[in-house]
Length: 387
Image 1: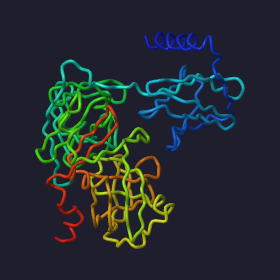
Image 2: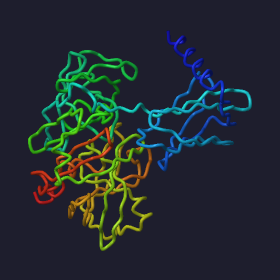
Image 3: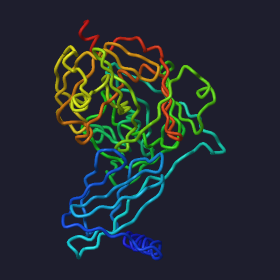
Image 4: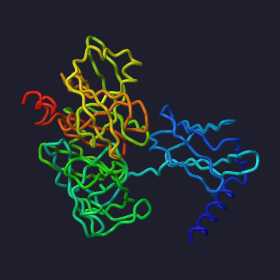
């Protein structure tokens, strides 16, 4: 069946390109790069053994420029959300490699006749890990972290060994996850670490095409098929356009120190338990006065793969998000072993984001933030220093 499906796919591609000659580019090395808009490049391996080699782009919110570059040649084209583009890479003048660049399908559940407003218990523990209940594969009740810095669903190695009875096949099979009253489907992956006291993480893309409301005042997550009017009319919110980099949501913010102000994009990362992680290379490039930031402590952190990340915590004078200003933030400075495949990016974590009731509109790609009861609480590192 798999071979038949592959044959049908190839025939469809050939037929769809019969009237228009398929572009051909040359390569003498199997190593290539894919550039999506202005984002960090994806490394790509040209493999003539794969019948149709498909690269899925990040979520596109508008027509975007894509570039595929080999050691000898390149091709550039504009790609619309939900669209794909086929071309051939001719390797060493003899091996034909059929390649497809595919944008994810556009999802939007706002037109459902039976509107969804599904309320789920949602909490933040003392470690700044959010968690909510998930019923997996009609068998296992689990406590999961909603991680907007991740995609799909991952369980910790400990949960897979000791807690999950249904013994899922990793990486290949789609499984049912009951979240609230609705059923979702996802492949399952394994990770060494997730947020404290959780069995794994649920990535943002499981709710693509929906509205996710996080109400920290009342400890609830509400999944909407259409954004409620009271949110649209509530002027206490600040609105942020989402930019997807490496298929993860970013919003724009501004950091300030010693009369120096720098705007940049920040990964909106509810899976990161600290305040803000600032990339040293980005700070140097913008001539941000890092030397004026008072060092609070130096530690070793661990990523989801168990990798060590040396981190310095220093006092950031001000962080501005829309119309909101946060002062004297114990921010983390990172230079090596960066969490996102070596990319130079800043992070916003739960110790900042939990201070805002949040609406993630994955239909129009907007995030709404409004201060809540946690807005003026001490940061975790401040509590430790005070105690």
